[in-house]
Length: 222
Image (tube, rainbow, N blue to C red):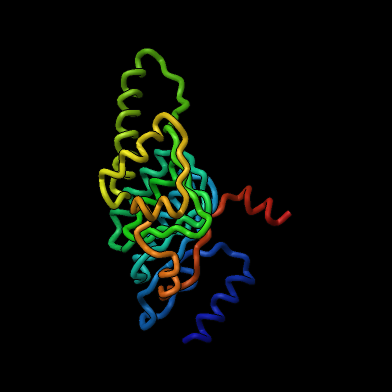
């Protein structure tokens, strides 16, 4: 079985085809374990859709949990809302890991993990949510209401990410000034609720899925 799976992975590597959860499908006897998604880049509709698809694939092929390794400065909050809500609707355990910088909308994705880890040297960056849509008089009230809903959702994600709701008083200043938390801060507040070294004990499932914007891949190849 191991020889067959290795051969399949080698053939995929030689073909140059992008990896998905179904590319390296283990046999029924090998079901269970942790499927990994490496997410490096901005939070966009495309990147969040790819992460959700990886989660759906993980369910289909029988993984126990989906681990999302995050390195993202943030991006579109509406895309993050889609991913968080879609992932939470899946019958699979979600694990998130802050691997380097995790900021803005990407913090909501991080907080979506039932099990959350933060790597040495990683940071969590909070700042006031911004929207750049031009507002006409007739749509201003609706867009202001949308802003209130988004802020409430984001605050709710942060609150659910803390060990004690009282800790919100320490970070709610992000609405008026930029706030940077290091790994010690994240563990103390409960945003990271598991040890980073505990990741070594996980039994991996299949081949990792990389969610990296095309322009970043081109830079690496040049």
